[in-house]
Image 1 (spheres, rainbow over the protein chains, first blue to last red):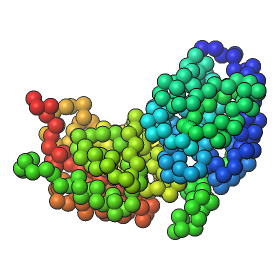
Image 2 (image 1 turned 120 degrees about the vertical axis):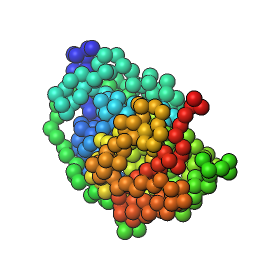
Image 3 (image 1 turned 180 degrees about the vertical axis):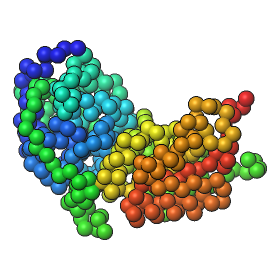
Image 4 (image 1 turned 90 degrees about the vertical axis):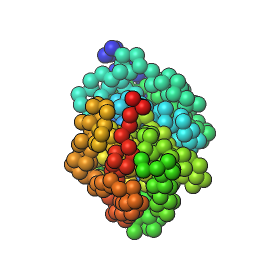
Length: 201
Length: 175
C-alpha cells in the first residue's frame, strides 16, 4: 500500500467536478455517497442531481437503470474509489448492457474519505480503469493531470459509451457541502424535473 | 409435479408484468424463473438485465424508476440476504420495488446450505421494510403477483412474492 502517493496528485476534486458539470448540458447526474456527493453539490445543487447518502455500491447500477430508462439523455455517474470497489461487479453488468449514454467518472484518491482517510485497494495498486476495461467497457481511461483531464471532458460529455474514467485526485479533507438528505424529496424533485407532474401523482 | 404438461404459471406472471407496464427485468437466475426469463428476453418492451449480485438490481430499479421505467427483480431466496443494505435506498426514497422470489431451503431441500436463508427469507424482508406475499398454490400465483404489483406501484412500496418450493418441486440434481 502506498500511503503518501495520493497526497501529491495534482488534480483537485472540487475543481474537477466543477469543470465537468459546468458543461453538463441536460445530463442526469448520479453521485455516489460521501465526498463525491459533496463535490457535485459544491458545483451546484440541481433537481437533476441524484446524490446518494447511503446505498454504497449502488451508484453505477442506479445510473445504469436510469440510462436504460432515458436513452436520449446523457447519464453521468460520479463516485469515489471506495464506493466503486463495493459495487465493482456492476461494471460487468454495464459492459453487458452497453448503454451508449452512460459515462462513469471515479474520483480516485485511494482513500475512504469519510471514515478517517484509510487507504483503499487502489493505494495497493488495484487499477479501476483496467478492471473496467477487462469487464468489457469499451472506452476506459485513467487521468492524472490537468491537461489530460481537459482533453477527456468532451468524451465524458458526448462520446458514445459506455465510458469509464478514473480520475486520480489529491487526498484532501474539504468542507462538507451537503445536498438535501431526504431521499423522497430528492426522488420527487428529480422526477418532476425530468418527467413532469404526471410522474409524481 | 402433477403431470408432464408445461406449467402455465410463468406465463401468468409474464402477463401480469405486461399489464403493469414493466420495462426493466433484473435477475440472478433460478431454475424456477427460467421460463419467465425466456419470455422477458423475447419481449420487445422489456429490457432484461442479468446482475452479478441481487443488490445491484435494487439500485438498478431505483434508477429505472427515477427515469420513468417500472421494473421487476427476480431472484431465489438466497439472494434476499444480499439486498439488505441496498433496500434502504428504496425505503428512504419511497420508491416502488417488485421482487419475485423463488424459494429454496424451504420444503424438501436437499442442500443444507440453502436452508438458513430459505427459512428466514420472509423475516429478513419484513425487517427490511418489504411487504411479503407467500404463495404455495400455483393457481394463486397470478392473483398474488397482481396484488404485490399493485401495492408496489400504487404505494409506492417494496413488495416481494415468495413462490414456494412446493410449487417448484425440490431440486434434486437427479440424485
